[in-house]
Image (cartoon, rainbow, N blue to C red; front, side):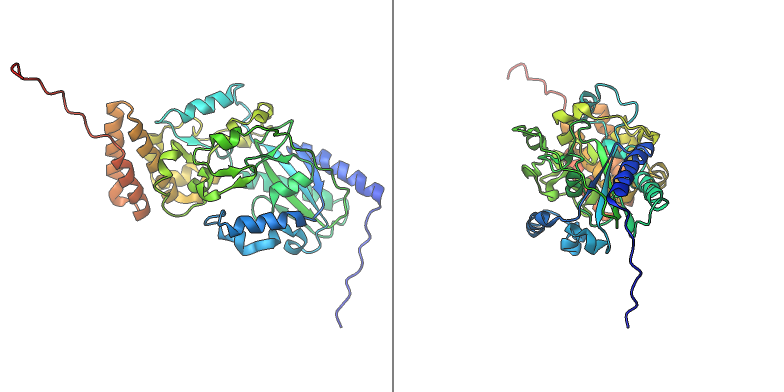
Amino acid sequence: MRRMEPSRVFPDAAQLQELAQAIRRQGRVLGFSQIGIADIDLQNAEAPLLAWLAAGHHGAMEYMQRHGLKRARPAELVPGTQRVIAARMDYLPRHAAPSWVEDETRRLDDAKAATVSLYARGRDYHRVLRQRLQQLADFIAARVDPGVVRVFTDSAPVLEVELATRAGLGWRGKHTLLLNREGGSMFFLGEIFIGLPLPVDAPVTAHCGSCTRCIAVCPTQAILGPGELDARRCISYLTIEHPGPIPVDLRPLLGNRIYGCDDCQLVCPWNRYAHRSSLPDFDSRHGLGEAQLLDLWAWTAAEFLARTEGSAIRRIGFDRWQRNLAVALGNALRANPQADWQRYARDALRQRRPAASPLVQEHIDWAMAQSPPPQSPPRMQAPWG
């Protein structure tokens, strides 16, 4: 006979309400900007998910298709789950200037500069969030038997934005990211799956209105329409998730973006309310906020590993790092900055090629082909011509 598990005794409604408030307070102590609680009925998200996968918009991210509808069914992913605690954590660096949007926009116009997404300039957010979410989960478990409790930080097939929306943390913007009226979109999301029937929070209404700035600004037009993203064209996907050659027709559109892309967030009016992080973890490291392409291109494989230790950037590996830099250098060569820089860049690309992988060699060759031919001195006209 199958052994019967002893039945669990849940706290009453008043105790669950008190626990939910305690979770929110402790979340603040741990550095989270906001905590919300969602139910696990994501049935309305299943059809859009299947349509997105069927269209191939997930690109090479096969894990999204492999897990299928489990992404929209938390109780199948973690049996026993009754609620999802959704958390958001600001990542704008503590010392970001009031003019940070203008500063980042100007950087995109500097062909010789290297642009790394703001979220990736500090410590790996997976580690920071996971550690603090686990502390929050331990806080809960020390007060009540939660049944099942499991922490996620972009580490499993979880519909993060959908859950955060249902937990009242904001609404899905037209760029598909979560937006919050008091915090914009410059934050990370994480979740705790829990086996307690905690009181859920009400969703908030959307406030994008008729604004389409994020759609219009996307360099590769990856945002096909409100809430519809083709990851195969997204610069964040191309520079991070995509394992192979970057499509030739998209390379010029990457500009100097070597890891991720913030364009749709930089133009969003709600990010005027983005908060600085309270944590030093997200401060820029190794000068990534001011780095130049040629300085990063000079890194050896050993230097890459040393300088990206504890960073999300290390996950892409040295080959993809060089691939991305080669594309950016090609775009800078085509932009035709001063002649001395052109010569230095061509020499740097040429010297790295023999030892590079075939993937990187292909992108070096493309970059070299973007360089304008050296200009000959003007020919003197014959006096009789």
